[in-house]
Length: 481
Image 1 (tube, rainbow, N blue to C red):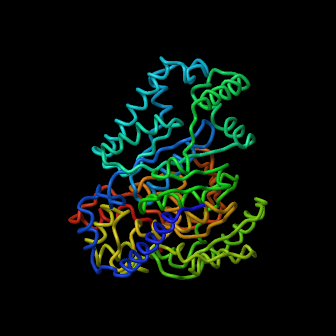
Image 2: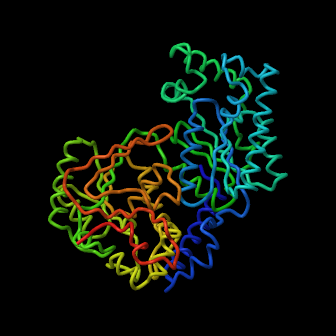
Image 3: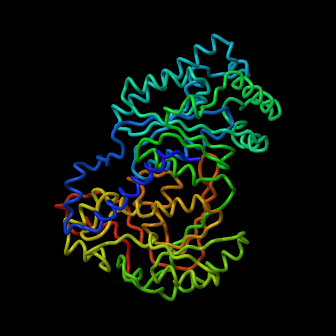
């Protein structure tokens, strides 16, 4: 059940997105946009009008840390500086040797003092993160199961003029709870010297300790608060009083993710005719080597025996030709198209340096935010790819055949890479990356299909000065015909 405030917030978000799309149509002829809106390479767009605290709520083993890490990764990827503050880490710094569940009993006064002090330290660090590190969102990852604790957080946020959004994970399915304990909790530092069975018994008793004082968020009593309640890993949701754009995006994201085991395969198209010539962009077909890769990819995918595999491509010839060799239906996404190089489309790096040396240097100075004249930046591309990420989160097994820049953006999301590192991630031709999402990360397996191709990866240059010599500017440009 979604309250009317959510519908209003989501409607406002749609209007904002339409305005942004309209503004992006007006492409500048120079790098004026970059110079005006980004006073330094460290500056970032402001997504929130005041800092926002995301406060987790729920018993242990309900997936709070999983949600915290995943949400933080997403917000950082879309450009919202976000950090997790995990109360368990604060507690382990103070109490370095864990004994047993007795520490979490609500009548253990000495332990309660330590836990309150840890929470206080975490809140102080959150305040420092907002004021000194220009953070926009902080995720407070703790149980926060009592009204008293939530009241302290609300008072703290009110005093500092922060917004608060609660995320409560409710789970009463014994199988889900036990699977979470076995997968994640028993490998925590608390139980490194424990036998597995002993650890399981102790952790279940720890949960019972929290149950003694657990007061869930209440639809009526807490109607003035902003929150989402997630039941049994997404089987049902209750959303209340969404206040702004960032909260509506958080709700939308949380309603799209799932924990079903799956694999995502990322591959660039086969080598294209323009790849051979060292020219960027364009819409040419595959080279003879690219055609060989398309056949090799089809054979590789058949060998994986993937259940209910979906295949996605861009709208460009080289990805479509690569997918056609698979002999299965595929979906075309315009959002997966290569980055638009504007006036530099189909040029070599040498030609760009010769005709637009200043633009070439500006891009090297901030490759993520630099926008090609009449074209796009990596930052634009990330926003273009957000619907693809949302749909990937909803799906199970998917093969995405795309382009170098698009693949870098997708890979950066799954591997939690920074905006500074994203444009330099290595995504070689004729190589398949198999991504398997895990509880707190992502497993990556790389398969080179043994079909030779040109190198299109340009390493980060050391000299990015506009006045540099041409040979210095071209030092990291890969060889081509």
